[in-house]
Image (cartoon, rainbow, N blue to C red; front, top):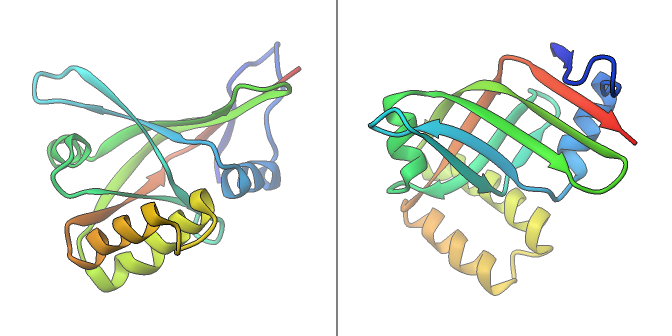
Length: 154
């Protein structure tokens, strides 16, 4: 895990354990940056699951979303997860994306995302989203980070 100090001389960087803990346990959105067909940036705030074992982000999204359209053209994204409350901290970086369309692969990952943000698979939104995953209308984006640029201030 390559960790850089995002604010040298101002803040401190997170340790490897702090980075994993922050990404795995916060309920913040990840913001991913893609580029559209004109080369313009697009920012996509979304829910995610971070796997501490393989240091990868997983995002569930519609297979017809703008994110998918952009990633199919260019599979490099920038990402940011940051806490707007003191002490301010966050993790940002760049990574490569793989699109998973296999339903059996996607179901357990999507379930982890639903439980993380909604608390239960019985939540009406979780039920609806999981139905779309099981129908193959949703896919999972797997982001493999090249590095983590971290900060803590305050």
